[in-house]
Structures are given as structure tokens and as C-alpha cells.
Image (cartoon, rainbow, N blue to C red; front, top):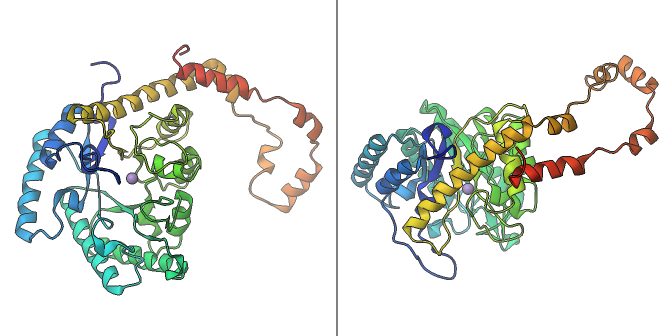
Length: 391
Ligand SMILES: [Mn+2]
């Protein structure tokens, strides 16, 4: 036990499919024995996690009868209660079964779209029964290889129809549930619709109930596009749409690696934790901190729990470092907000009068262009905090 040992107040969660990943990949079968969901709940609680998330079929096998479902749910609820664990988020598996090989909500076939809607309503019922307040949508199969198969606009419109339908379902059932949309650029499809968090944020603004829908950005997915994950999360936070987050790590330009949080690009991981925790001064993210990742295929079960504990420890270590970095007087001096009592009021809220004053203000672009900003010094200070020789 030390200051970085996770506990329930840290709000760390894992999917059943994350620590339950048996190590299968496109080139080889499982290297680990599958674990029972109730056992995963017990082991995650021992590791200090707060909750567990699931796809419908992580818990209830595809095609199970109503009686089988109810008995599994009863047993699972018992395990949650025994271990003081919660289910903050649930989602639907709309990608494994061959019926979804060409998408679910965006499929050209109304029968497939009908099956997807029905499966999602059932899975929403399951999530709510287990206590979920967030419902994630990741459209892994909603994409193409043969792009001539449809007008991509109809894929977008059909996805909107599905979201609007399901929002109405949640309202009709009087569920306290919000949706979080998760973007990914490709894999398993050649191209997936709504490839980034930015695409999702715009799509949400076109829905019938945009207030019910936010985003669930994932580190690996945004990195696959070669984009800044920190900027994507910041944009979501700035418009109050960060409903959930998927933490992991990813080398840029690779397949979806789902590595242990912080194990690649420590700088980005640090800046992300700093943003989420609000150590710079902005409003923090207060939702669950979900790890959507899995242990290396090289690991046995002990390695899985090393992976889980490591994910949470790294987050807490980076949180402590972010606090010290933002309290460092030299850092604070370098990034102190610059105020200009005369200019600041002229720069927002256009009026004709303000614009006339702005045109009259004395500004010297040559002088401004010559001024050094000391970002080399700032970045090195960040490196020294990260490398453990300062703070
Ligand atoms: Mn994810």
C-alpha cells in the first residue's frame, strides 16, 4: 500500500471484456482461460476498482432464453453486492454476430436495422437493471470496404434515426440514462463512419435530443487517426459532452493496440490526466475513469491483474505529478494568464463601437513577433517533473 494504491473513491472501472480478454488475435487463438463474470467482479474489487462495465453478450450469451438471462443477472447482481461494485456503463455488442457483418444501424437491410434496434433496447433494459447511468455506442461494423454499396449520407441519416428512436425509448421507459458515442477511424471495417470525436460532436448537434447524448472518446482510437487525444477530450469537455472516457495507450499509426494506460506516450497521458483532473484550474471531469484495454497476449491470469493494477497506479502517479507541476512556481510564472484591461473587453461580444476602438488600438506586430515565449523552458520543466527529478 502506498499513495498510488487504487481505491473505490478513485472511480476506476474496467469492462468485463478488458480484463476478461483471453488473448485471441487475428493470427492466433486464446492464450488464457476465460474467466467467469462474477470472478472478474471479485478480482477487480480486490485490485481497488470501483466498477465494471459490460456489453450485453459479455454477461448474457447471444440467444439465451429469458429464464437463463434472469438467472445470470441474479447471480451477477449478487457478486456486485458482495464486492461493493457498481455498473456505471453498459453497451451493446453490435459487431460480433455475422448478422452485423455490414453494420447494424447503418445496414442497407431494414431487417438487420430492426434486429439491431431490438437488441439495443433489450441491452438498455439490462444495463439499467444493473444500475448503469451511461450507455455507450461504438459502431465498430458501421463502415465499408466496398464504398459503392451505399450513399454515405444514408448511413449517417439511418444512424440518426436509430439514436432518436433510442432516446425516445429511454424517455418512454423513464430511465435515467445518457448516451455516449465512441468514434474510431477504422478496424474492423476498412473505414468506419464518424471517424473521430469531432465528427461525433457535430452529429450530436443534429439529433432530436442532443442533451441526452455526449461522447466516449478513446485514447487508442483518436491516436489511430494521428490526432491529439488531449485536444479532442478538451473540445468535448468545453461543450459539456464528455459523458464517459476510455483510457488506454496506442502507438500512432498502428492497429488498435488497447495497451495499458500510460504505457505509450507518457507526455500525452500526463497532459490528459492534467486536463481531466483540472489541475491547471479548469473544471475537472467527474465521471467514471474507464480502462478499455487488455493485458498483453504473453500474460497469464496473474499478468492480467498486474495490467489492471498498473493502469490505475499510472493514472494516480500522473495525477500527483500534474498537481505538483501546476503548483510549481516556475511553471505558474511561465503560463500565467496575460491580462490587458484596455483590450480584453474589446475582444468578445462584437459591437460597432468596440470594433471602432479595436481598429484604433496601438498594436506593434513587429515587437510581438520578436518576443520569445519560453516554451522550451516550460516543456523541459514538464519533462523534469515527468522524469522524477523535480517536484
Ligand atoms: Mn473503447
